[in-house]
Image 1 (spheres, rainbow, N blue to C red):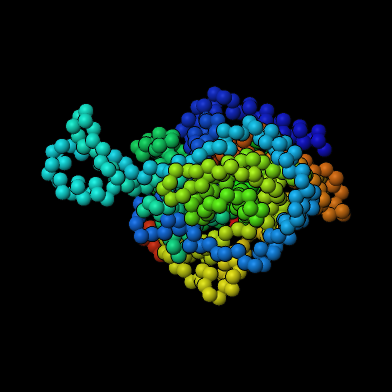
Image 2 (image 1 turned 180 degrees about the vertical axis):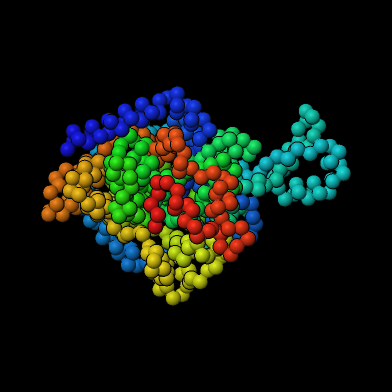
Length: 592
């Protein structure tokens, strides 16, 4: 089994090298932009590059009187039942990790264990202690002396509102400060809540973040603005140059066909690319690691997906979508530290202050480790009070091996509730840009239950999410593949990708727990996670670049003019035509 697997991988790797040597990668990749949008980050770069820019999928718009973070309006409190389930899940994980239960005292060996974890993470010292400064939300506007004199009163009024003016004595011209209209990426996430900005995340939990407070049109406009900013500021591709560039769109498995169509319209219409092709993340990941057959486990910031690929073809019936990811692990980390009173007495709120999520994510990446025994570490936690400089707090973090175990016991990861749009919203007969909402978003009749449980769902489009653990999802996915020889190959060819895929100790944990989950009736005795040849965070992007370069015939590509004329209704009550135009293309995504 191992020999057959390695031959398959080597043959494909040799094939990729033979048809796409460095020269071809350089030539064909110079005008090919690969775009991989996600819930928390968007990865974008030229196909010839080694790795993409990884930018938070976030935008802040200057707007007084609006909520600081739109998403906080969609949050519900954790219910009593969820608290009980979480504590039970903690104790289950604790028994496996051989550590005290939630309300038991420590065994006293913490100091020895703590020393080991500090030594283990020593290379990451600079990353641990990163401090995020508040974003400067002002921009300088140069004013000539003549203009300044003729509008002295106006200038005086503006100066009172904004920060003090700065005068350039060299050229005798004045410079006054005003608020920036839009701020993108990490800068948007590090804006003080005191500033008059509304922060938006256009994609949440693997779907467009449409709600009564965030219209579909605004979502599309924000996605266009974020991508346009990256193209201009990071890749330095101007609007006039776009027509000579082509886009590879690598979309998550969570996207519905309607969201894929909207992304195509953004790329071809709003961003003005000459042509585009769509690939799904699962297939892209296989090509990114030089494989042909594998079980792809993609663990992102807010969702995790499992899908099996056989000989470069996605198997639709193996797809599993789990509503949790790295950010949920971060919040679990915070909950545990507060329970044990290890967290400083500071106001940490990952919903109201996105900068706190950045800090927690770094703590998770630096310290969380799945292994037996008590895992503790001395760390520096920073408090980000409104507009004040970050203040360091020394503390000892405990039970650092429990939060990532939430991947296997999801009740540990009580998610914030980001309700998904009703499935009817994705049908072509309804205009996506008309905000027609007939749903009760967590009103008084919800009785504290998660909002998605009270939604009416179209029978033809049931919800895909499954509330099971990672081991069960992988096992169920592979067992749905069919032939026993294929199942054995897939169980020995598991790939962990996404940001969470780099968690220390996760490979061994997946292998052990998947093996235990396989029914005894199955003649399968081996489970193996293959090491990733590329950074797990960027493997889907890299695979998209390879797929775009290898597609010499470009039969699956959609031209801009063709899409705008044949794929979209103009002046009609519905936005997209019913001709199955997009489904007729030879694309590599699974149609729902």
